[in-house]
Length: 61
Image (cartoon, rainbow, N blue to C red):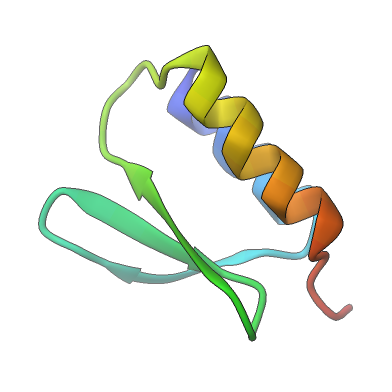
């Protein structure tokens, strides 16, 4: 999955970029943080894991 695609979906679940790490960007819903690697392509299994966590823990609107 492309990183831009993953970021759009995270934003759809009301997650926002908390900060830039050295190798990962840290996304948060206000309570939970999830690292997202800085690669153009992200492994499908990893992307599914991140999106499942985002779906279960939607951010506040």
